[in-house]
Length: 121
Image (cartoon, rainbow, N blue to C red; front, side, top):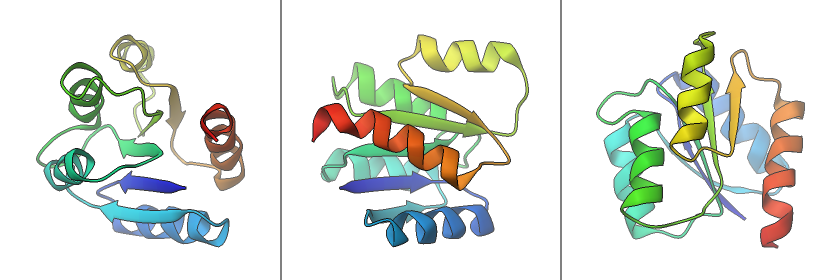
C-alpha cells in the first residue's frame, strides 16, 4: 500500500512516515504541496495524507484537484492545527474522507487509514 504524506513540518512528516513505514506502508513524503500534487498526477497512491496549510499548494487545493480534475476517489485525510469547525466542514465539502486535528495520534491515524483502505484491498 502506497501513501503520500504531504506535510511541511519536517519533524511531523518524518515521524509519521517512519511510523507508517514500520507498519508496512510504502511512503513518499513531500514538504511542498505543489511537488506532492505533481507526484499524485504521475504515480498511483492508495491514500493521500496532507496538511491543510502547505507551501505551493494547500491540502484543500490538493483534495479539490484530485476530486474535480483527476476524478479520483482515492481516500484523503487532511491534517490541520486549525481548530475552526468551518475548516473541517469545508474539507468534507470538497471531498476529504477524514479530518484529523494536530497533534496527531499515530495509533488513531493508523485506525483511520486501515478503515479507509479496507474497502479498497
